[in-house]
Amino acid sequence: MTKRHSFFTLVLMALCVFSPTQGFAAQDRAEVEASARADVGFDLETPWKPESLAGRTCLDGRPAAEFPGDVVEYWVNLECPWCGIVEPVLAQRRNPDVCIVVRHVPSREYSESMKKSLSYEALKKFSVNGANIFWDKVIPKKPNELPLPYEASLLLAFQEATIEAEAFGEALANVAASIVNQDVLAAQGRISMTPTWILSGIRFKACDFTAAQLSVALDLAKKARGGDKEALEKVITLMTNALVDEPSL
Image (cartoon, rainbow, N blue to C red; front, side, top):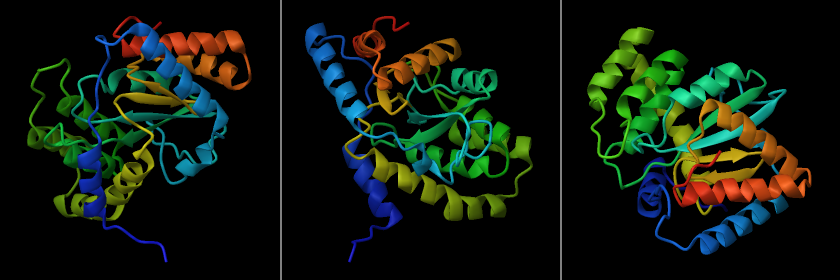
């Protein structure tokens, strides 16, 4: 019989494991590049199955299941200053043939990351725009900057979507908890820092792409998975640059 964990047990597991980090500037570049090359090689050997995201939605609210275009994952912590929402939303608007699916990596490094993840997913059941407003308000815009307090951000989202407190509570318990639970499990041993983009099944660690950069990176990832060696080397360089805090694209 498979052992089942309660949602709160899984939350504690996540809090003990994840410690999102941006950049490894102090490490030797050759070492970082070798690690990136190994990661990409592993990812390319692993079949990419976007259908596993059934039940999830794109950033604009469309269902990810059986999406006719490219499905990409955006792994975030809603208190990580590099995990912004503005550029991904812009990328989603500019690229209707791409589905950007947000996935969550809550961490003990930040005091409210779990409840912010839960609130965001609950808000999406009522208003995608309200949820994205909440995200933009609760996340700091730069390191060491204080975001708008959680309660005030939630109130703004409530006003945007005209949500009743009781209905929101039901969405937290019946929808958001299950979604974040799934992400906690899926991230184990796979996602080590935020933000991480997964493009064509390749993990792009520490890459906070702009809308324009995301399109370029996705094209490179698709070519690399198709066997294009030049594209593969560009992907590795892009990832290495991000990890040592150098311009990626």
